[in-house]
Image (cartoon, rainbow, N blue to C red; front, side, top):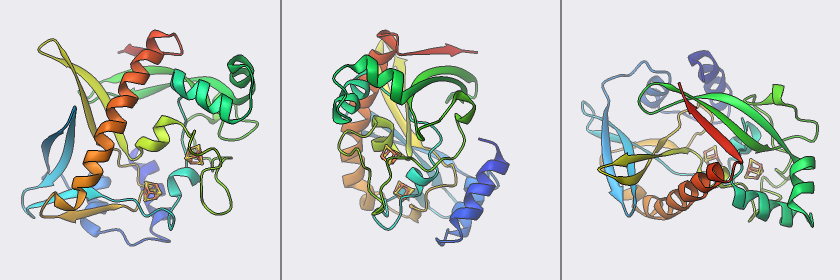
Length: 234
Ligand code: SF4
Ligand code: SF4
Protein backbone atom coordinates (compact mmCIF):
# COMPACT_ATOMS: atom_id res chain seq x y z
CA UNK A 1 0.00 0.00 0.00
CA UNK A 2 1.32 3.46 -0.84
CA UNK A 3 1.53 6.23 1.79
CA UNK A 4 -1.20 8.12 -0.10
CA UNK A 5 -3.54 5.15 0.10
CA UNK A 6 -2.82 4.80 3.83
CA UNK A 7 -3.44 8.54 4.31
CA UNK A 8 -6.79 8.25 2.48
CA UNK A 9 -7.75 5.31 4.71
CA UNK A 10 -6.71 7.19 7.87
CA UNK A 11 -8.61 10.31 6.82
CA UNK A 12 -11.77 8.24 6.41
CA UNK A 13 -11.15 6.44 9.71
CA UNK A 14 -10.71 9.73 11.59
CA UNK A 15 -14.24 10.79 10.66
CA UNK A 16 -15.51 8.22 13.17
CA UNK A 17 -12.58 7.47 15.49
CA UNK A 18 -9.98 9.37 17.51
CA UNK A 19 -6.52 8.19 16.48
CA UNK A 20 -3.58 8.91 18.80
CA UNK A 21 -1.43 11.54 16.99
CA UNK A 22 1.75 9.54 17.59
CA UNK A 23 0.22 6.37 16.18
CA UNK A 24 -1.01 8.39 13.21
CA UNK A 25 2.56 9.62 12.55
CA UNK A 26 3.89 6.08 12.89
CA UNK A 27 1.32 4.62 10.47
CA UNK A 28 2.27 7.29 7.92
CA UNK A 29 5.97 6.43 8.32
CA UNK A 30 6.80 9.83 9.83
CA UNK A 31 7.68 8.55 13.30
CA UNK A 32 10.76 6.41 12.87
CA UNK A 33 12.33 6.10 16.33
CA UNK A 34 10.85 2.63 16.69
CA UNK A 35 12.38 -0.71 17.55
CA UNK A 36 11.12 -4.21 16.89
CA UNK A 37 10.31 -5.95 20.17
CA UNK A 38 9.92 -9.69 19.75
CA UNK A 39 7.72 -11.79 21.98
CA UNK A 40 7.46 -15.57 21.64
CA UNK A 41 4.03 -16.87 22.56
CA UNK A 42 3.73 -20.64 22.15
CA UNK A 43 4.81 -21.34 18.56
CA UNK A 44 4.60 -17.81 17.21
CA UNK A 45 7.07 -14.92 17.39
CA UNK A 46 5.24 -11.60 17.56
CA UNK A 47 6.99 -8.43 16.36
CA UNK A 48 5.69 -5.47 18.34
CA UNK A 49 6.62 -1.84 17.60
CA UNK A 50 8.31 -0.26 20.65
CA UNK A 51 8.89 3.50 20.96
CA UNK A 52 12.03 3.85 23.15
CA UNK A 53 11.63 7.61 23.73
CA UNK A 54 8.09 7.20 25.05
CA UNK A 55 8.87 3.80 26.61
CA UNK A 56 5.66 2.49 25.07
CA UNK A 57 4.53 -0.37 22.86
CA UNK A 58 1.97 -0.10 20.07
CA UNK A 59 -0.72 -2.62 20.99
CA UNK A 60 -4.14 -3.51 19.62
CA UNK A 61 -7.67 -4.40 20.66
CA UNK A 62 -10.76 -4.92 18.51
CA UNK A 63 -13.76 -2.60 18.82
CA UNK A 64 -16.25 -4.95 17.15
CA UNK A 65 -19.32 -4.70 17.23
CA UNK A 66 -18.90 -0.91 17.35
CA UNK A 67 -16.48 -1.18 14.43
CA UNK A 68 -16.50 -3.35 11.31
CA UNK A 69 -14.20 -1.23 9.20
CA UNK A 70 -12.04 -4.17 8.09
CA UNK A 71 -15.11 -5.79 6.47
CA UNK A 72 -16.25 -2.45 5.01
CA UNK A 73 -12.88 -1.81 3.38
CA UNK A 74 -11.74 -5.32 2.55
CA UNK A 75 -8.90 -5.52 -0.02
CA UNK A 76 -8.88 -9.25 -0.83
CA UNK A 77 -9.87 -12.56 0.75
CA UNK A 78 -7.31 -15.29 -0.15
CA UNK A 79 -8.55 -18.75 0.81
CA UNK A 80 -6.76 -21.80 2.16
CA UNK A 81 -7.80 -25.24 0.92
CA UNK A 82 -9.64 -25.71 4.23
CA UNK A 83 -11.47 -22.41 3.70
CA UNK A 84 -12.57 -23.64 0.26
CA UNK A 85 -14.13 -26.77 1.69
CA UNK A 86 -15.67 -25.17 4.79
CA UNK A 87 -17.03 -21.99 3.20
CA UNK A 88 -18.31 -23.96 0.20
CA UNK A 89 -20.20 -26.32 2.52
CA UNK A 90 -21.44 -23.36 4.63
CA UNK A 91 -22.86 -21.77 1.46
CA UNK A 92 -24.63 -25.09 0.72
CA UNK A 93 -22.52 -26.14 -2.27
CA UNK A 94 -22.47 -29.90 -2.65
CA UNK A 95 -19.31 -29.78 -4.73
CA UNK A 96 -16.29 -27.61 -3.83
CA UNK A 97 -15.60 -27.25 -7.59
CA UNK A 98 -18.99 -25.49 -8.06
CA UNK A 99 -18.22 -23.18 -5.13
CA UNK A 100 -14.82 -22.37 -6.66
CA UNK A 101 -16.23 -21.57 -10.09
CA UNK A 102 -19.10 -19.39 -8.81
CA UNK A 103 -17.82 -17.68 -5.67
CA UNK A 104 -14.07 -17.26 -6.13
CA UNK A 105 -11.57 -15.76 -8.55
CA UNK A 106 -7.86 -16.12 -9.10
CA UNK A 107 -5.76 -12.97 -8.80
CA UNK A 108 -2.07 -12.08 -8.65
CA UNK A 109 -0.54 -9.25 -6.64
CA UNK A 110 2.84 -8.05 -5.36
CA UNK A 111 3.34 -8.36 -1.63
CA UNK A 112 6.17 -6.81 0.43
CA UNK A 113 8.30 -9.37 2.27
CA UNK A 114 9.60 -8.84 5.81
CA UNK A 115 13.15 -8.54 4.37
CA UNK A 116 12.11 -5.55 2.24
CA UNK A 117 11.75 -7.43 -1.09
CA UNK A 118 8.65 -8.24 -3.07
CA UNK A 119 6.87 -11.52 -3.55
CA UNK A 120 4.37 -12.23 -6.30
CA UNK A 121 1.34 -13.99 -4.85
CA UNK A 122 -1.27 -15.81 -6.90
CA UNK A 123 -4.26 -16.75 -4.81
CA UNK A 124 -7.73 -18.08 -5.08
CA UNK A 125 -9.85 -15.38 -3.46
CA UNK A 126 -13.41 -15.31 -2.17
CA UNK A 127 -15.38 -12.73 -4.19
CA UNK A 128 -16.20 -9.74 -2.02
CA UNK A 129 -18.98 -8.70 -4.41
CA UNK A 130 -20.98 -10.87 -6.77
CA UNK A 131 -19.55 -9.38 -9.97
CA UNK A 132 -15.96 -9.02 -8.73
CA UNK A 133 -13.21 -9.36 -11.35
CA UNK A 134 -9.41 -9.54 -11.07
CA UNK A 135 -9.30 -5.76 -11.75
CA UNK A 136 -11.00 -5.19 -8.36
CA UNK A 137 -8.25 -7.08 -6.50
CA UNK A 138 -6.69 -4.93 -3.76
CA UNK A 139 -9.35 -2.20 -3.97
CA UNK A 140 -11.46 -1.40 -0.91
CA UNK A 141 -14.85 -3.06 -1.19
CA UNK A 142 -17.51 -3.53 1.47
CA UNK A 143 -17.72 -7.31 1.73
CA UNK A 144 -21.01 -8.80 0.51
CA UNK A 145 -21.19 -11.02 3.59
CA UNK A 146 -21.25 -8.11 6.05
CA UNK A 147 -24.84 -7.96 7.33
CA UNK A 148 -26.88 -4.98 8.57
CA UNK A 149 -25.95 -5.68 12.20
CA UNK A 150 -22.24 -5.48 11.33
CA UNK A 151 -21.72 -9.25 11.63
CA UNK A 152 -20.22 -11.69 9.18
CA UNK A 153 -23.00 -13.56 7.36
CA UNK A 154 -20.83 -16.67 6.86
CA UNK A 155 -19.44 -16.81 10.41
CA UNK A 156 -18.11 -19.24 11.71
CA UNK A 157 -16.93 -20.29 8.24
CA UNK A 158 -15.35 -16.94 7.41
CA UNK A 159 -11.91 -17.01 5.73
CA UNK A 160 -8.83 -17.49 7.90
CA UNK A 161 -7.49 -14.07 6.85
CA UNK A 162 -10.54 -12.45 8.45
CA UNK A 163 -9.73 -14.12 11.78
CA UNK A 164 -6.14 -12.93 11.50
CA UNK A 165 -6.68 -9.23 10.79
CA UNK A 166 -4.89 -6.93 11.66
CA UNK A 167 -2.00 -9.39 11.95
CA UNK A 168 0.18 -10.21 9.00
CA UNK A 169 2.04 -13.51 9.28
CA UNK A 170 4.82 -15.45 7.62
CA UNK A 171 6.95 -18.57 8.08
CA UNK A 172 10.72 -18.56 8.04
CA UNK A 173 13.33 -21.29 8.41
CA UNK A 174 15.62 -20.79 11.39
CA UNK A 175 18.33 -23.39 12.09
CA UNK A 176 16.38 -26.00 10.13
CA UNK A 177 13.06 -25.30 11.90
CA UNK A 178 10.06 -23.47 10.49
CA UNK A 179 9.18 -20.51 12.68
CA UNK A 180 5.94 -18.60 12.38
CA UNK A 181 6.14 -14.81 12.77
CA UNK A 182 3.40 -12.21 13.14
CA UNK A 183 3.27 -8.45 13.06
CA UNK A 184 0.56 -5.82 12.73
CA UNK A 185 -0.54 -4.52 9.33
CA UNK A 186 -0.86 -0.75 9.56
CA UNK A 187 -3.20 -0.01 6.66
CA UNK A 188 -4.95 2.96 8.25
CA UNK A 189 -8.25 1.05 8.39
CA UNK A 190 -8.22 -0.15 12.01
CA UNK A 191 -8.92 2.18 14.97
CA UNK A 192 -7.81 -0.43 17.53
CA UNK A 193 -4.14 0.55 18.01
CA UNK A 194 -3.09 2.18 21.28
CA UNK A 195 0.06 2.92 23.28
CA UNK A 196 0.91 1.16 26.53
CA UNK A 197 3.95 0.92 28.77
CA UNK A 198 3.32 -2.76 29.41
CA UNK A 199 2.27 -5.72 27.25
CA UNK A 200 -0.08 -7.01 29.96
CA UNK A 201 -3.29 -5.60 28.47
CA UNK A 202 -2.74 -7.67 25.30
CA UNK A 203 -1.62 -10.89 26.98
CA UNK A 204 -4.84 -12.82 26.35
CA UNK A 205 -5.02 -11.66 22.74
CA UNK A 206 -1.45 -12.81 22.06
CA UNK A 207 -2.33 -16.14 23.58
CA UNK A 208 -5.48 -16.62 21.53
CA UNK A 209 -3.95 -15.36 18.26
CA UNK A 210 -0.82 -17.46 18.65
CA UNK A 211 -2.90 -20.61 18.10
CA UNK A 212 -4.97 -19.06 15.27
CA UNK A 213 -1.89 -17.73 13.48
CA UNK A 214 0.06 -20.98 13.79
CA UNK A 215 -2.86 -23.06 12.47
CA UNK A 216 -3.42 -20.63 9.62
CA UNK A 217 0.22 -20.80 8.53
CA UNK A 218 0.15 -24.58 8.50
CA UNK A 219 -3.05 -24.48 6.42
CA UNK A 220 -1.68 -21.90 3.98
CA UNK A 221 1.52 -23.84 3.36
CA UNK A 222 -0.65 -26.87 2.74
CA UNK A 223 -2.73 -24.76 0.32
CA UNK A 224 0.40 -23.77 -1.60
CA UNK A 225 1.42 -27.44 -1.74
CA UNK A 226 -2.08 -28.38 -2.97
CA UNK A 227 -1.67 -25.94 -5.87
CA UNK A 228 -4.33 -23.43 -4.73
CA UNK A 229 -1.78 -20.61 -4.61
CA UNK A 230 1.78 -19.83 -5.59
CA UNK A 231 4.56 -17.68 -4.28
CA UNK A 232 7.46 -16.29 -6.29
CA UNK A 233 10.20 -14.32 -4.54
CA UNK A 234 11.60 -11.46 -6.68
S1 SF4 B 1 -11.10 -2.57 11.87
FE1 SF4 B 1 -9.93 -3.19 13.69
S2 SF4 B 1 -11.23 -2.62 15.45
FE2 SF4 B 1 -12.53 -2.59 13.63
S3 SF4 B 1 -13.48 -4.65 13.58
FE3 SF4 B 1 -11.63 -4.71 12.29
S4 SF4 B 1 -9.99 -5.42 13.66
FE4 SF4 B 1 -11.70 -4.75 14.96
S1 SF4 C 1 -16.06 -12.74 4.99
FE1 SF4 C 1 -17.06 -11.98 6.85
S2 SF4 C 1 -15.36 -11.43 8.23
FE2 SF4 C 1 -14.51 -11.61 6.16
S3 SF4 C 1 -14.58 -9.53 5.29
FE3 SF4 C 1 -16.48 -10.56 4.69
S4 SF4 C 1 -17.97 -10.01 6.29
FE4 SF4 C 1 -15.91 -9.57 7.08
